[in-house]
Length: 141
Image (cartoon, rainbow, N blue to C red; front, side, top):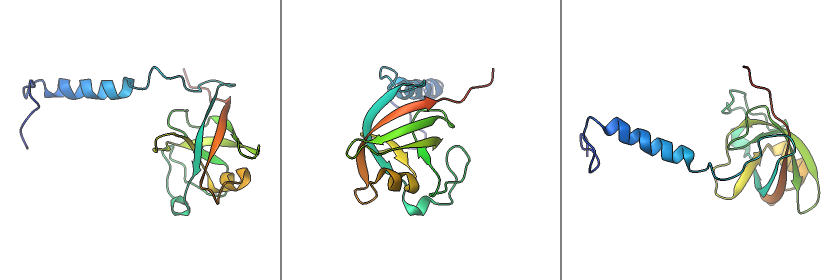
């Protein structure tokens, strides 16, 4: 289908059509509330990073170290500090957001392997959690 454009789009306005698609995708989640300030919280499923990611670069540019207390969140700014509580056993741990994800429907956070050990869900692989924002890094003005 090289050189063809969707119905109703000329080659001239194809860029405009793509811009509309991108805008719709980006705005799709705007109606949902997300934790964005200290004290904000959400509940959902957590998973943890597999060993194969150890040593790889994260979305923030940092190298993932499975022995550190780091996490991935779809939207929170890099450097945000969060508390994650395992709702099955009450264990909690603090993390710093350094990556994006998880990209599995229903999951709200991926934690490091060390974090999964501290929250005691390595065997299960996933667990229901409460995520609370402790601090959000300041942005330069």
